[in-house]
Image (cartoon, rainbow, N blue to C red; front, side):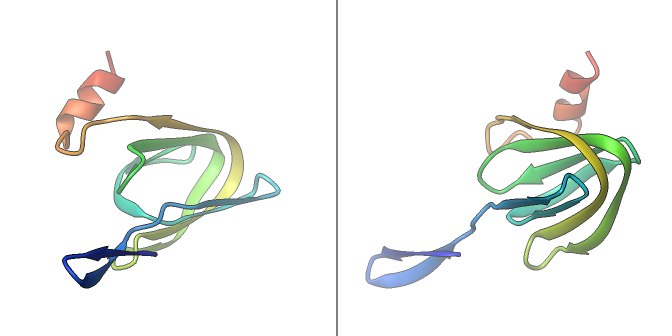
Length: 100
């Protein structure tokens, strides 16, 4: 996490990182919420970068730590795509737009 000084106090900003190993293991930090998942697609809402859509085959969430925002995914990863959203856009609005 990055430190920022505000009014003399140091606060930590969440950091969003992706580490992809041989297209079979993906570590993601800075995750706010897992919106949906199945063996072919995982949709994650990140703290800073919007929505991350991961597509592939035999995808499994191996580890999820909601306190730190870390997610580990195993499977064959074919693509990763970000969809920018406003910070207050949450819930069914995203899925409704995705399914249009």
